[in-house]
Amino acid sequence: MTVDVLIKGGTIIDGSGTNPGYTGDVAVSEGRIIEIGGRISSAATHVIDADGALVVPGFIDFHTHYDGQFIWDDQLDPSFSHGVTTVVAGNCGVGFAPADEKHRGRLIELMEGVEDIPGIVLDEGLDWSWRSFPEYLDRIDGKAFTMDVGVQLAHAPLRVFVMGERGLHHENATAEDISEMASLVEQAMLAGALGVSAGRVLEHKSVAGAHVPGTFAEQEELVAIAAAMGRHGTGTFQIIPLGAVGSAQDRGASVRSRREEHRRIEDLARASGRPVTYLLQQFPSDPTDWKAMLSYTAESTAAGLRIRPQTSARGIGMLSMLDGHHIFRFRPSYLEIAHLPRAQRAAAMRETDRRAAILAEEDSAAAMAKDPTGSELVRTTRGRVGSTFRLDMPLDYEPGPDKRLDAIARAQGVTPQEVLYDHLSAAQGEGITASFFLNYGDNSLDAVYEMMRNPLVANGLGDGGAHMRMMCDASMPTFTLSFWGRDRSRGPRIPLESLVHKLTRDGARLYGLTDRGLVAEGMRADLNVIDFQSLGLETPVMTHDLPSGGGRILQGARGYLATLVDGVVTRRHDAATGAKPGRLIRATAVRG
Image (cartoon, rainbow, N blue to C red; front, side):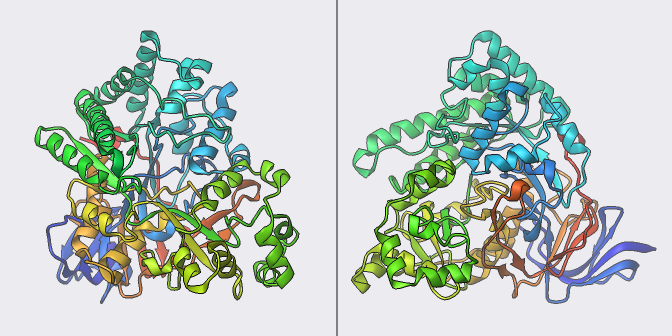
């Protein structure tokens, strides 16, 4: 017998989270794993030598925003470069279906404001060849990708589709509105939606400054949607709850608010009978809030509800770099040289007179008006310069307090803005800084470690396709394995078996993808072969490969000897093969 692919001599970490790694061969035919053994003698069309390497399931990234990118792109970077073989979009309550023509512009404004996807990119990239959610799925189903893709129905476009201007203006839904929304949810689930998403976070606004439709929806509306999702026995409900309020001095108000928020999540799980996953982060205003939320979830789980918080494997925030976002970009003396290549721009910034001018100037109001999203980023980060961290090479995503710009400024007798300026403009202009808004409240990842070690917490928030001018958190799978499994120096690490489980089987089961996420006979052959000692992240770079020449930060990886999707090799030695075996996942096709 000749098999399609034979992976020989690798250390198999199967994704179960319980079985220790072991050495063996893996045989693949017709998209399935057909045999696992110490030595398989079958002839093979393709042989991959995995001696000294890890063989693990393909990574499942269930928190992405590729809703628009699905239409114009079939490669799906940055996720594709990081061993991801399945992505789920339609998160956080924002998306592009269902959509009437008159509301398309508003949906683009929402995605631009909430997820930092430039409106001009969406204007050019979306063909709007759909109106209903099933038609949107059909549009995606006509394409081939480097990985499998799935979509959730987002609450904001659903609400606007049913309620029109009333939904945009946050009016309460009538009984008729709720009934129609529930009917459309059932229609979406029958068409193959992987679930429903919603958001209640006040910080999420459109580029025009409007809150996301559904932010203030009454609980009756969300419960009805959750119940409709669950009527067919499929689907996962994803929600962003309200964040912690107050501070340590107002602990009582924070506890009351968050307890009530968790009860809302419990209502959704109870009404749907399905898993509910909510975003769990460490808030700087209340650094221990996450512990309370986890305790509420543990109580609910003991009572039989299926609730899974999800968190990020590192601090959540914003990168500043000369070719991307930085607080000097709208200052007149910088605008004079903004067109120059990066190295020449850095040299010009180091000129004594220009340096003094840029540091002293106010932002150009005219320039800011042309880029509302960029302007908001500047306003957000300008007041956080002191708490921003210098990221030294190789990139250290757990920088100590001595790397904060205010600490460096005190040591040098200068201002934090001067430290930032000199770091960005040094040498060839490759300097990078990070401002962590969440999950870094103690200037460390200790809280993240505790969350990740909790079996209730899922690893999510890669945000592929979103925040593309701020960060590249879609590189999270590579970071998770290399940092938590090998490189962390400021605290304990996490066993590889647990990390692989979090990246594979755990996420697959959360979204009902029962055919993947495990190296076992009969399972779908979505696999990664990884040189673990070489595994690592490349330096983030700004590219301009989006529709209309839009820019985005990409962060490559090294150490992936091979990635297989449906038994087809899509990457070999960190380079694309050109294969596109990925297709749309419809829930009814993969769930029992």
